[in-house]
Image: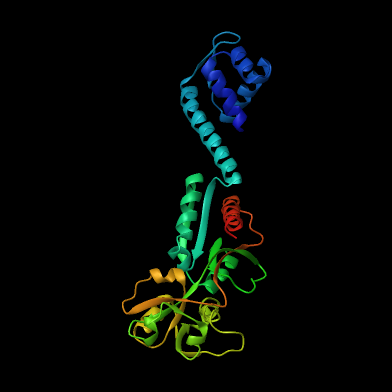
Length: 298
């Protein structure tokens, strides 16, 4: 049984006349009659009672079958519509990973709001994680798009581009002698003690320290922290200073003050990473929006 059999039957059932139904379907009357007979043979039941050569009425079986035929055709039309929308990227789901600074600067909320306004049929799932785990998750398929610290190079399976840049600042214990400064230069920081990120977070936090140190220059790292909250907690405890991206000033930890770096050697960059072989229309549409934003802001 094919959908055309159902369409032919519904047309006859609604017109109750073979010739008029055939005209509506733009096929010949004999062809329509043959198709209805084939349908009845497949079902092993009589659906129509012939009154004259063309006029018919529905049997009790035909009335019941008409309900199911209409429902099936509606479902088929809906499936076709969903398929076409999915092919255009209008429906689907996108798994997004992000580092905290992408949210703190408003980048992620802004992008999600704009994308979902234009694509209400696409659902977005968010997961906060650090840069290295995000890249692995994209390769493994657990994530589709990753907002990460811009790496020096991407894994072979991935590609990416920078979507935002912002300055670094120094996180200082509020009773530290440098807290009285409004701006702090890298030279002033050269002999200070620092809290850095763990080795697993090196893309993020060692990149932060390179904003105040030239290649080959060593800094006095006294402690490593697994995340930004732990890093700022250690700063508040007076263990050392922290170099963080400016958006992270929104993370309020008592006992910590933030100061701008004058003459920083580099800026913090947030990049978007995705699979080179990405084929999902919804994900490709989201990436296109990100690329457009990157071009507009760079």
